[in-house]
Length: 488
Image (cartoon, rainbow, N blue to C red; front, side, top):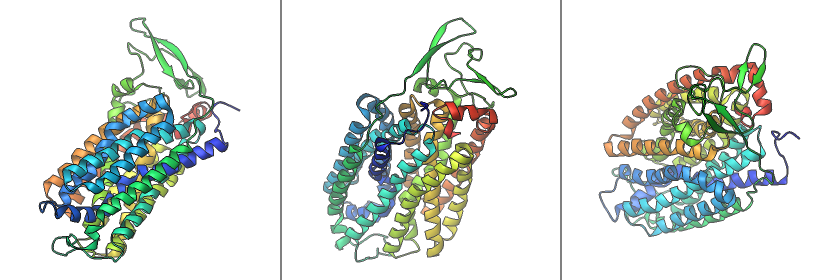
């Protein structure tokens, strides 16, 4: 068997299952929109100044904690392995949720939910990286399968939370948009946190327990490239001989150092098409302009999804008073976000990750426009929420694969951790600024429509730059020899 073939055995299947189960709790931040009316109504009894816009800070605290710790999670996984990393993540996620039941202010809840975000960040990439070690030629599918749990978990937990808190389907006050302080809905919020915290612990530790690392670790090949400018020898770590020079006319592939001109690695650039790809460390990646183009693309294509996930219920309640209906729609949206990743992963393996992301990125702001204009209709609102969540799933499914394709497998955890750090900090700022603006949710929707179309344009630029790599038939060689070839 080639060392680049997929490894299909009991360990690999269990690891895939474990990663998917663990991602049930990794995705809980996207169910915030479902529980925000309950939590906001609960906090108002202690501070009348609390509003939906202010409780967005609790949501962004989770996201901020995740973003800050994604990079550290990649480092931790290298040192202690995916299982122990996920144990730590599960402990933080479940305890942060459980202790949120004792919070009576936004600041204290921000702190507890920030701990949840730290747990998510530390453990997010570990199951995916572990899956890549088994399924070297099917990374799009691996990412899609595992991150399916990211949507399935919130779907289930959202139904559990709403059924527990508002089983009678009480309606919010039409004037305030909140539940009365004396209603059972408000009184059940602390118990909801304790129930969910316990469930998160069970799912997290179960998923982590069946994560199994491959017994044979792929050997790394190190060779030196000589600088044409100063003659210095600079070691470059590459996995699976990913550095090639392509002769498209003849179909020959050979390693070469002629393209290294005074640098320790080839820098892609963000204006000129390139024909080769490289195994880069995080430090090297940061110096590449294509890295920042990719980050800007991720921000503009992903932030709208976070905004919709946080506000769909608050926005929907401006026209629809049925809490159970909106809850079910939101839960179906979470499920759509998860299941759609199977579709996006399979599509990426067929037509390419870059082209697939571009299609999803143009569709997302288009449906956002329809979502904004048709909120009065239950059917239109429901369909659009589900579709928007599904389109958002493309960002989560495809960006790790694209990052791995561009910057290599060896430093995948830390590289994507850095990308997500900048992405998370930027999205936190954007969403917090949206909340602080005091603008209506309908007006904010239009702001995110514009951001979405900017992201779609950036996707087109990235696809243009990678055309020679992604589309040339000569690159079939990479699919046969490279561990990231299947992401083309």
